[in-house]
Image (cartoon, rainbow, N blue to C red; front, top):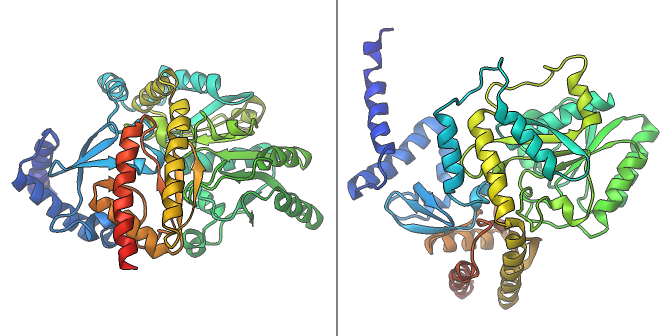
Length: 452
């Protein structure tokens, strides 16, 4: 097939490269983009995303189509301003287009983007050392990938290599990603059921119940099932910012040590300040054997994740075959530059402390609002700026999410998943901006309550 046969593709890509280069869009172009985006999703991507997204079903004549963002706000193709309280499901701790992260990536992109795979790329080493300086206890090794689910894959893999065991214990309602290994420890039937069977066995216990972990390990020992590790989120994110009892994590650490299994903590959503500490495990002063981080590690600009562990565990990757786990694009120089900048900004600007302070204020006000609307709310949960609204019925959650969307506040919550709706704004959101979100929320709730 000659190049002349690709004329349509060349013309189409040329048009879009021109659009990408524009800061602002005129009304006609904005309308075209909105219609074309829906059409492209339906015909070439996944029409279910269109049918279940409030940005389409609740948006009016034109779909809600994001274009650019700055700080706490994002703007659609028509230039309308939204307060972002979804935060890319945890990827936008530093908000939209943080200038220092963008500049670090831009500077690196002009030098090298993807590593040679043969020469030593310095930023991978720099980021590994930087993480060793800020992770709990004696965690001092990292491996870099491009997404959260890949960090779980790596964690499960090294746990199996190190222990020589193949099975895991996870928690009900856990969310660890959607690749096959991650799905094997996923605690949600909707995502894992149709993909079975997985390699190895996974056992599930209630989150926050240390005695259940102990009992499951005793049963496995009696029937001869070897367990490599227990994996859990320190605070369950996708389940709705579920915080365990205070005694839970210290007890889990003791149980894992006693039964000689590894403890894997999934900090993909909670890591780097989201919960009011740099790491969510810091709330309980425990040190996991393996930790995973992603989402906000890229500063909202580049996809990057890391699974991290102690030198003793890392020997399983180093000897006899140091290429037991590799990736062509994971931990590329641009991603590492973004992560270095993101960590720098997070520490320098004391964002975990700001998340703790603003989060306490936010949750306090939310609890007051929830008490005024008991027919709608069950309760409010969370730590820092990972906050969950729990509803009496999933339909109420969707009404709240869509009511906020109409009032230019973005939160999670779709037609198929609205039992809980999270608030996870940029960690530097101000109290004034929180008050504006709460005003719009209360306005939406009054409308919903009047219709019940």
